[in-house]
Image (tube, rainbow, N blue to C red; front, side, top):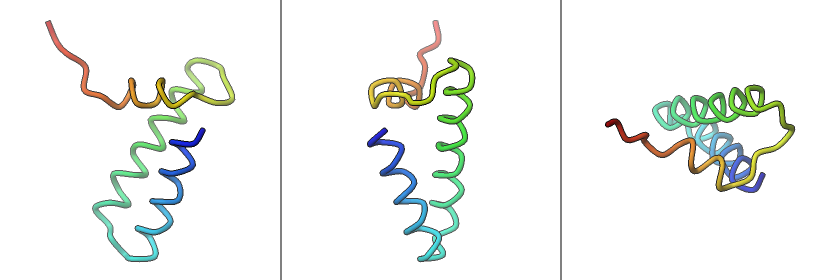
Length: 60
């Protein structure tokens, strides 16, 4: 959860700084993480799962 907590802190800092492009990206990332948690039916994801999901997927 450390990665997700760091993203939430970064979001809060970006909102205070009124850095809207960063706010939009971080909100999207946090939404993707929340959707993945719901999809997998778990309360928390570990850092490796979060990073693995955020990396671009290779297409064959």
